[in-house]
Length: 398
Image (cartoon, rainbow, N blue to C red; front, side, top):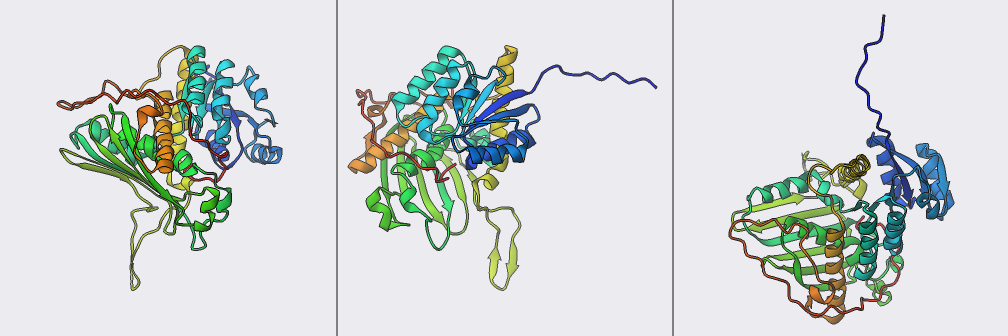
């Protein structure tokens, strides 16, 4: 008997280096190792070497290092996954770009617009892809809601809502003093700000008003903790949005979105682990999700698969098919809203987003018939940003 020759591909897998072996970095590593067949994780960098060793041992990763420069300088690595603390994000994006490597970076892209702009300029100069970890765009229900909006199901968006309630316990927050000031805006609500921007395509945020407090752990408020917040965002198409967050939902991890418009409404999300309900003497009950990596398990995988496909496309010299993944403009717009919300909380007043940064629409060509956009107010940007204590790895809003 002779072999039957089958078509084969000479394309090697996309080789990735991971920077940050913490909670979300470890999950991304698992996704690459077990669920993305055209990618391979070749190396892990983390100054906490035992964490890198444990991850590498569990997933069969050949190389570990405490220095991200080793990954940047490795010619065999095509792209970098950045899952480090936020204070390192923009610097690592720029370093990877200078090394000619594509970058997937968790949010936020930077702690100020200025440092993010420098990182994005380095990426543009190098011609590399940069994708940010706004995973809700890749969740099936949120993606379906966006398609309905694109198809005109809601007409002109008028009211939008996005919320994040982190799972909690009756005992409250375990270590509220370790949650850095600004975390609720920069680490948690930044997901909601991106979701609202994405579900209101073609528009840009122009005004922000934030109210926040420490209602879960009031004893930690003096140290700068904010664990509950509501933010209103006014858009250039006149739509009004509300984003809210809380760090201690006893019933589970709850993420939802809603868009109401001139022709109808779409919704997405919720804490239920399945559509199964139990009917007993105690009443009607449903199971709920308790971890972000469970609620967004498939979305985390899909966003990395999208990134890997983009790396492979650039390596092959052609454009990636499909809708663009969340990139620099998206990261910048969400960060500007977060920084405006911090300033609004500090002053108690609405803040024009143009005082933080001049924004552009991520999808400028998108517009429903008859929908009029107004230009954001051209206020001279202030060059100072709120001074924030270094964010800790709390897991809020991953």
